[in-house]
Amino acid sequence: MASQHIQVVAPPSKDATVQAFLQNMRAHNEPGSVPLVFGGGQLHAEMPFLLNVPGAPLPCREPAADFEAVNAHFSAQVHAFFNGLHEIEDMAAKQSPDEPALIDADRGLQPAIRIGNQVIESEPDVWGGDRKCLHRAFHSRRLTVQKIDSLPVLNHVTELLIVPEEAFTGNPFGMRPVSMRTPLDLATRLPQLRRLLCPWLWEYFPIPFTSKALRIISRVWAGPWRDDRAEFARGHLRIKFHPCAPDGSWYFSGPRGEDPYPIGFAITREEHYPSGQEDDNETHELMSEEEDEYWDDAPDIYELRQPDMFRIRPIAERVNPLLLAFALSLQRQAMPSLQDAELFTWLTWRPSKERAEEYEGSDEVPPSSGVEGISIMFRWGVRYEAPAAGGDRKGKVIWYIGDDWRPGDEVMRAFKDLVGGQGGEGNMEWKEFKFVEEREQDPEDFL
Figure 1 (tube, rainbow, N blue to C red):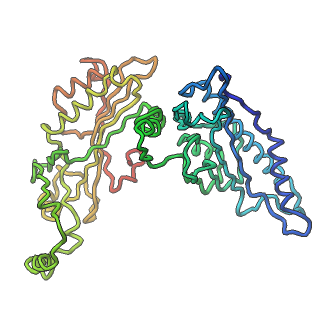
Figure 2: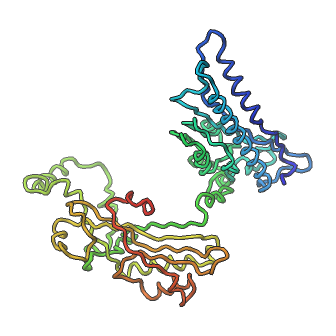
Figure 3: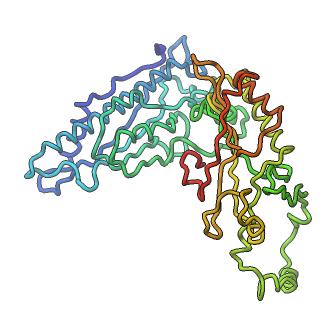
């Protein structure tokens, strides 16, 4: 139940919304003027007033019940807006051929939803002064539209704009952020939608306040917005790692153990970040000395730009510690809300000409398409699915690491502990590689 600090005004009804649409059209379609069609209208979504009641000032942080009232009010306005548009579509469908068209057949409807700022009715010091608290100026909870499935399907909407009223004023105080899924939810009710415009859903670059307190209050990762970090992908962990480790070594070798350049190299200021300006003459002399590398019998520049991609076999002493750390991080007590987690990388077989000749006809490498220069790619990794509520509480581990390699014993024990201890072998699944030429060919694997 909302507190005494919320003052909600009833949103307009469907009929009132339709009358507002028609009245606006009549104002532009005076006798003698060129008739205008209905473009789609605008919803100016207003937020309920927040009251600083004498003797009972607003709490510093917004209670969940207050936000639910605000969100329900926003949702009701969107429902009334969609219902009004649906009524206009029905009216257009019942028009006779002799009447001026209510909706342009090609353009369709292009409605806009503009979200107003949160307003507080109270003494002037609410945003500062003696109060000295701006938690109410920066809102952390995101607006959503409730009961999406009960919204009417609008068959004439071709474009939808969603934006805060004061998106580009440079004043973030009082703006209500919108959930990233809200535009997508609304799009499910618009089968003819061509453009979904969300120029600003209240993301902005951090403001470099000199006040440390303001920096904490206004930044997602430091202050009240930190709850927002879990809103978009709660319960799902997806880690893509690079085949090259941070120390410069590689997690993978060639099929026969090839591991050139097995360690990294130091980045030095003198060699990699030289001071001063480039010496043109020195560069010209260097070019002259290396002329044979760029002219005459030098390789084609296309070949020079193609790396020798051959690392597709795990190097146990480097990969096992990574897999073990991943398994240990998934313990239930560490991530009680986790639903699934995945650790993976993309591996590519596109060797140099010389290396390709060495492996010609070998079954040690992925099957080739037969076209020279085409990459063969596949995902390598492991996926963990946490136990479902009310299930056997064992979860599941899915490996896609090939048929001829297995993790070390310590790694296997750690993953078995996640799915039922030593008896958890039955909750492990081993999948074959899916070879593709482009990541987009497999939508499930594409990142």
